[in-house]
Amino acid sequence: MQRGWHFLQIPGPSNTPQRVLKAMSSPTVDHRGPEFGKVTLEILNKVKEVFQTSGDVIIYPSSGTGAWEAALVNLFQPGDKLLSYESGHFSTLWKNLAKKIGLDVHEIPGDWRSGVQAERIAENLKQDSGHEIKGVMVVHNETSTGITSDIKAVRKVLDEVKHPALLLVDVVSSLGTTSFPQDKWGVDVAICASQKGFMLPPGLGFNSINKKALEASIKNVSLNSYWNWERIVEMNQTGYYPYTPASNMLFGLNEAIDMLFEEGLENVCQRHKRHAQATREAAQIWGLENQCLVPDEHSDSTTALIVNDGKADILRKIALEKLNMSLGTGLGKLKGKIFRIGHLGDFNDLMLCGTLAGVEMGLELAKIPHQKGGVQAAMDYLTGN
Ligand SMILES: *Cc1c(COP(=O)(O)O)cnc(C)c1O
Image (cartoon, rainbow, N blue to C red; front, side, top):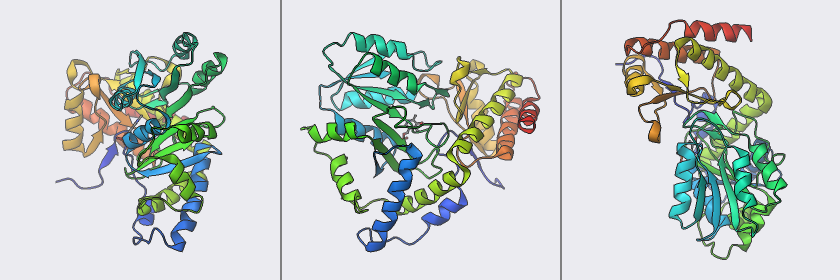
């Protein structure tokens, strides 16, 4: 029997604010009626500001995985060559999906402890003088490792090498937590989902696309899919969809974007940065090693900490059963080796302190060697900054 609220401290889905839940609880509407078109137009205009793009944002009733697939099938045909960078579990899943649908992906291997090294992408592109590589796939914030990569640097090497490949970036756990100005950074396609920085439940997938990407999809002769951008963009002009959209999720999105704008996107990012730093202050006192080895690449939405002797899952089990808190599991080859603290979305200082207190108590209960005082260090950081 557990009283009080559950601490959902996985790095997505994040906590959904009451305001968003309330907006979602409105009655189901006629998605071809006059009111719905108006609301959709409003949402589509506002969501562009979140991506900081003048392009089109396509919103699917899907998870992030669907949005990954959508981007790939719109732009490429089976046999097309792509370059991907292994940053962790999510980059691996995306690459595997691309291979399954017949794309010829060359993956630059990574160590899961540092972000994308743009110069290694440059090396590969320089060797491709015939411009056979049609796209470059990178993950902005690798949620499985708590590592954020420098997307500007990737754009820069594409420009320097003068390579025409499209740049596809997964921003599922960075949008709404970490600065991501899509147009300024020259990202052709940004892929996102609703359940992280957008503070919504899972259920919406996003493809934010520029002109170059839309034109490439229109030229794609093998494209014949539910995911087809062109049809959706066309119908979106008047605020409608070629299929039944997830209307109540869209109402929630409308409210969530208002919340992001009320706070200010920059302030939202600063808040996440501050909570991430406070979390690392605690981890340092505990003596737990961060999965991310590069100081500039620490994620603002997720902190992944290493627990020796495979005790990470014991810690998570105790946190859940005794303290009513969910912590993120180690994914892929990190299973059992790390646990992840999600500090993203609708989140404040005391929620962070509660979360960190739960981790510190969990470490004690799981008999994992650590030094006490991590929560104090985090509180000191929060009060001092
Ligand atoms: C959560 C996440 C996804 C999500 O995919 P789902 O299909 O919604 O589970 C993709 N990429 C990253 C980086 C993520 O953090």
